[in-house]
Image 1 (cartoon, helix red, strand yellow):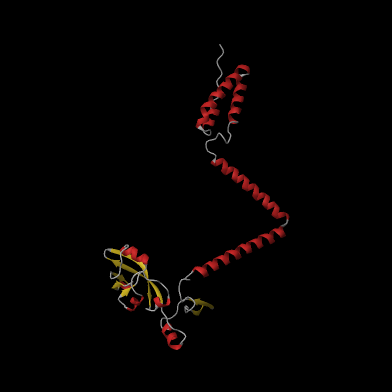
Image 2: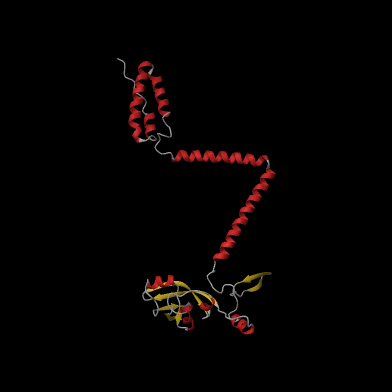
Length: 258
């Protein structure tokens, strides 16, 4: 009695890992029918070899479940080939290649620098009406044998410059410090700015509420719109108070005036 030949199972299991499900049932039936047809005409061993080879030939991109890995491998091979071709082209004429690369790099660097400089120049603090008449006092110091420029100056210098030079119409001092702000039960770690009352007359910061002259009162403070929303929501904060705790534990209650 002759036993009926059966196809090998591993090619089918291997194929199930990669092929789309909608094609598997039809492919399995067709391949098994082709195997039995070969087994009747050829030896079982040869029929199994043909079956295995035909199954492996079905690993086509159009039938496969996920092509992400194959795309990555293909892309890597493509870029690797581009890299080799580029290197060979550069090595054929190194002098010309060096000139072209350096020239292109310098051109790109100059364009980036020009764009960054122009953007900073024409977008930073351009809304101030007196921007062309406001100057920052700096001082140069010799540190470790090198002259260094600092954007800070002694506190009395502003008043002295205003007294000695009639060209100086106004001056204000600015200093940022870290403090703790307490409003009702909420506590915030913030950076605040100490300045003279002339600050809002020299710089154009429009006030939504309040008056610029409020800085003349040492018990009043002016907050930004973002800080107002943070502490009080959309309500008008004028007249509200908050406690500012300075370094050393010194605290003081201030009234919001703008």
